[in-house]
Amino acid sequence: MQTQVGRGLRKRRDRDRLPGGTIVGPYAVEEAVAEGGFASLYRAVRLSDERPVALKVLHRDLAASPRVQARFRREAEAIRRLDHPRIVSVLDHGTLSDGRPFLVMEWVEGRPLADELSARGRLPWPEVVELVSQIADALESAHACGVVHRDLKAENVIVSGQSPRLSAVLVDFGLAKILADDGGDVLTTASPMGTPLSMAPEQILGQLVDTRVDVYALGVLLFQMASGRPPFSLPDLAALLEAHLHAPPPRLSDIIPASPEVDEVVTSCLAKDPRQRPASPALVAASLRRAVGTRTTAPASEAVDELCAAVYVVACPPEGGGSSETLDRLDDLVEAARTQLLAAGLMITWEIGNALLAVAPANQPSQRRYVLECARALVGPELAVFVHADRARLVGGRCVGGPLCHIADWTDPRPIPGRVAATRAILDQLDRRGPEPLAESHP
Image (cartoon, rainbow, N blue to C red; front, side, top):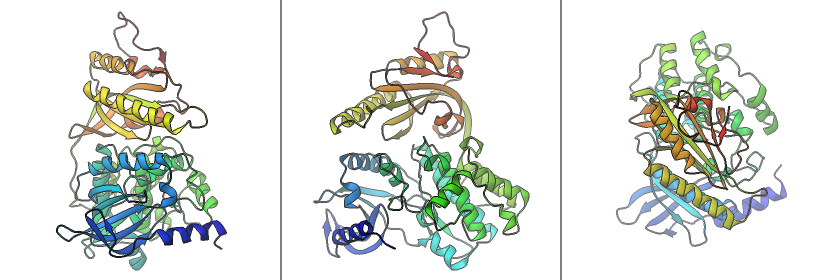
């Protein structure tokens, strides 16, 4: 039964709907297509050439926060950097006259994978392998640009073509992160996240997340395509969250014919502990191809594993969150740290909310020492800095995964501002004859 609050929210959103013919900058709205928890989606055309585009407008109640709007703009710019044939292109972004931010994306012809599964049930294995490979390749490209999807599900995969030659495109990158960063409770029945059929345990708990949340969601999607249903499907939100947190996932072979090798691929993706999941979506696709014995036409990214050093910088707001001016100042500090690390030659791998991760090769002690010096130069009363060295997966010179990107494994969930913490891994084998570069060692 819909609550009074829910009815009021629905009426407000109905009033905010843009009618056909509304002009939004250089675009004209044609019709409303869909409404989700985050935003309303419209089909529109670019007036200069009548090119069809998708216009996504954030709901007014979610856009009321200046922090959400600022993060929306930053994330929109990050998503615009994604350039992959299986990722929807973001063409433009801006703000309506009433203050609601919007994104303009290419219009992708096709249908949601959720509709395909609803119509057909489970898919044959060759199609499952092909779609998993296509989706994994898109995720690898996004991760290389420092973008984690965080909301991968069948509704956010658009497929075109006919069986057995389906082609997938991913949509809705980054929106979940934008809103989660505003500090609101994202796990309520009125949540903009919707029913979390594919949320990883660490995401549910509000812990630090990395690329492995997309690996978990890819495992959910693999299970759903192969069996016709998600591994956990419960009508009660609390029970669904509890299942993701604690219940072992059902074995695929208990539902459909599947080999132990396929069971292992799915089970590893759905591990509760992110450290036990495959390190990247590409590894999931490769393992599935071996387990099923099916080749794919999806392009394989050339990846190398290399010892690298990482600097993780996080701005620490005061207890209670602080004023808008304080939060703006912290955002400026993170941006300044980004500029400084780029100037020093490090690669920015993650830049989400009030934190960023920068990476550099570290095969030689001199390289690790240099990264330590870069970290030391960032220390300030409102920044916490962590430094670590481990194996990283590089594609085209960009860090896309590996143990180094598993930030939660080597940082403190309660960072202390004004300190730089170095792990033993980064300090190992350094020449100790020089001055100690950091104030603190973090195990």
